[in-house]
Amino acid sequence: TPRAFAFFLFFFASLSRLLQDHASIRKALIGVKRAEELKKAARASAFPRLSAGANGAFATGETHGLLYSDVSFEIPVFAGGKYREERRFRAEGVDFEELKLEEARAALARQIRKIYFELLKEKELTRLAQGLRRELNEYAGHMRSLFEKEAITKVELLNAESHHPRSRH
Image (cartoon, rainbow, N blue to C red; front, side, top):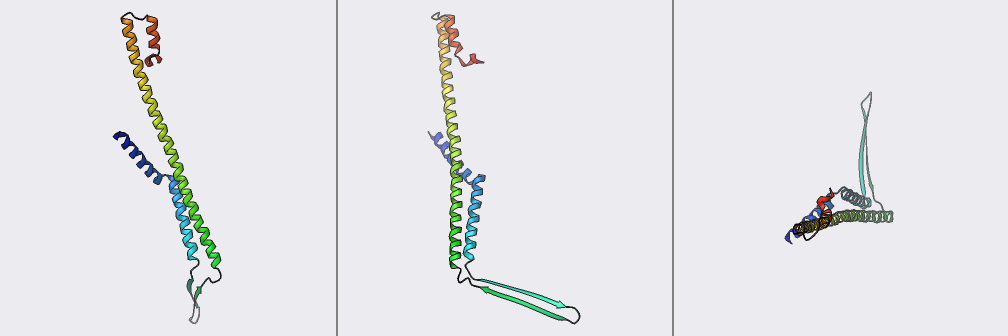
């Protein structure tokens, strides 16, 4: 039915929103971003580095000034294997964090589906109970009409009414 189809669309849209907003998903996304940043940092460590610094000092008495500057340039020549291994390790870290994200999404989706199917089960049980109540009402009405026509005894009528949901209070 169109109503059921609309409900399913709403359910899956809600599931999609929840998969993005849930705390475990956010935590896993932060882990992925952190691993990606570590991977970028590992890649950057293989590039040449340039640093510069300056210091100054003045002595008391006669004015003497001292200025010291330092510039350094490093090129990692013999560390290629180390950096390559570090990049590989960080790339595996990203893969691991992405797997944790997928696992968190799958676990959350499983929980939601379980709740949804429990909801469907309860809805079906409610529908069955309402149908049973309707049939018992019809049966009790039929038995009352038979009693009024003197086709059954008072004991049979009471027995039929004892199965009625209103008699269980």
